[in-house]
Amino acid sequence: MKCPYCGGEMERGLIQSRQELCWIPGEDRKTFVRAEFHEGAVVLSKLSFLKGSAVTAHLCRACRKVVIDCADGTSDKNG
Ligand SMILES: [Zn+2]
Image (cartoon, rainbow, N blue to C red; front, top):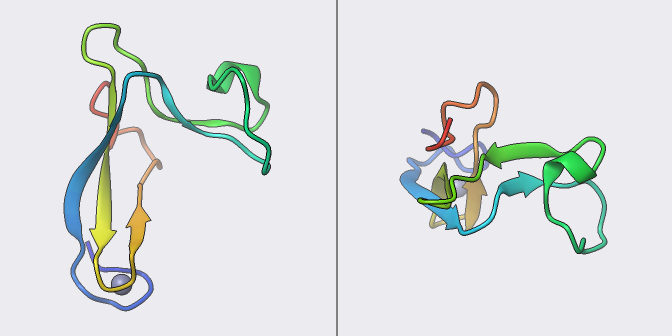
């Protein structure tokens, strides 16, 4: 994947958690970080109680940016 900022090649990797990985709108930290509790939230990786959650992410080391493609759920290792 090409970096949308500099056009350089990005490194494929993973972001993992023991909880559901989701993007939540707003600036405030939440007590319950589950998408179902927050309108407009986007699940990046569903939770597996055995394996946790993991999503494919691409890193540009030059720009220090991380990109997660959550368009169709194929980046979700539990999808
Ligand atoms: Zn870049």
